[in-house]
Amino acid sequence: DLLKIRIPGILQRIAICFLIVALIELWVPRRTNNDGSQSMADIPTEEKAERGYGGEKIAEDAGGYCSYCTDIRLIHSPYLYQWIVFIVLNALYLGLLFGVRPAGCGSGGYFTPQCNSASLIDEKLFGLNHMYKEPTYIRSKECSSCSPAECPIENAPQWCEKPFDPEGMLGTLCGACSGFLGLQIGHILQANRYHHTPPEKILSHLMGSMLSMVVLGVVAIGAGMPLNKNLYTSSYMLVTAAVATFFLMTFYASLDVASIQNSMGDRVHGIVLALVSPLLWVGRNAIFIFVFAACDVLADIISWVHTGSKENNLVHWFRVNLLQDGLGFSGGILLYTWIKIVFWVCVAFGLDYKGIYYKI
Image 1 (cartoon, one colour):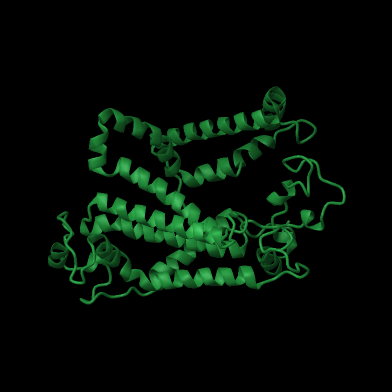
Image 2 (image 1 turned 135 degrees about the horizontal axis):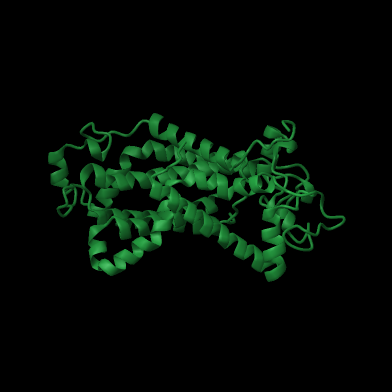
């Protein structure tokens, strides 16, 4: 129904964030070094050797900075103008978050279901009919006496029935900032590819970036910015980016850094590879798994075949009649979720084994 179709969404948000980050990388000019080069990849080979970027010990520069600080300057200084854009995007997000005030909020907070600028902005841009109809706050005690939103309360607040889109435009703006942080982590990883920065030193830079994001996230929380996924707050963006960097750093250390692999021993390294293999299978067909598993497209297709009522289908029988009736609501949902995970990991393995990869 074109009059009620939801306009924002997960894939829409990812597309917009990728577009913003790509434009920043392609169009924002890079700051040049004294020799006219724009990045470490452009620094002459002789100068790299003088600075120690051939695997030798990195010497202190003429300014007397430590080698780690020299690395930071050389890796990130070409992207100074990109960081300025990042700051501007964050300032714009915070300005809209705290500057746009829905009517009737009074002295209430900025992060409540009834008082938040994100909902007002989406309502003006898309209209209520084109926003998500089942926001998470309908599960709250103000809206339902049981979870997940199965027992709506009579005389519940009016906002319980109001649509709210967790993939709205304001959160997408902060989501683009999260993507930007990923871009800068990519610049760190490229240091090894372009000028042979030792992997151990790259790990130290990843660690430094992660800790910086943790500190800034804690500061934001202390300043009153809650960890809120629906509003995609700055604190949520920083903390989740730090968590993602931690896992990337862990995988990089265990899979790509030879010195760490050698210290593990063949047996331990084999165990590590076995543990991460399912992640590799799923990652190589990420969009396929997302569409058919996370979006429940396969379950919906199977549910098309039913007898009488639409609920009389194989999926409903398996999830409700077999699992939930036998193990209880929570136990049935938990087992159903794990069965889905194992099933799709097996599907991903089969696709990888056959060399079949679906991409956009």
